[in-house]
Image 1: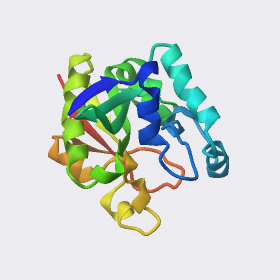
Image 2: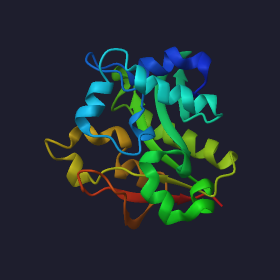
Image 3: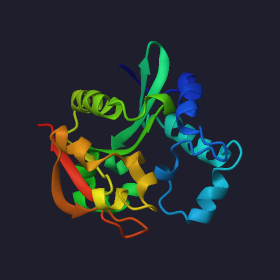
Image 4: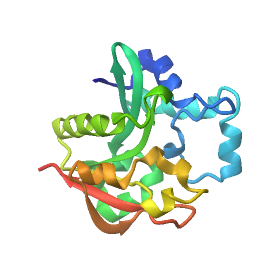
Length: 198
């Protein structure tokens, strides 16, 4: 597995991993809106998802690469959106808890996307291991994940929420449950899991 930070020259690969639904183009942009109603989000995902794409282009324009693309044999395999907690509007409540210094010293993982033919083959685990190394090398003091609880993912209306990862995958990588919950519009159980890097 080979990782590269998202950059303008890799937008086509990024799109192939985040805009594969026949009825939508999310561009992994939901994490860059502080608050958005689901009907508005659905509307922004129609067609080419140009408003969502603009969010990602804005990140890159200000020098923030919001994650890593993973490749296997030169082909795009997976995506992990990760960066300083302070950079993601969707993590505003967690940034407030951490304070300005903490929210810049702590990285947060807000999305995984695995190519369809490689799901349930351990790619997420391997990608997480690689991302931990990259985040540590970048100088962050800690890395957090925000998966929905197993009970939520087991619900018929919650199974699709696995794009933020699985608690078991984070635990296997050494993350611990902080006992805190990440605020979310559904008020469903979503633990803050943390790995100290220093």
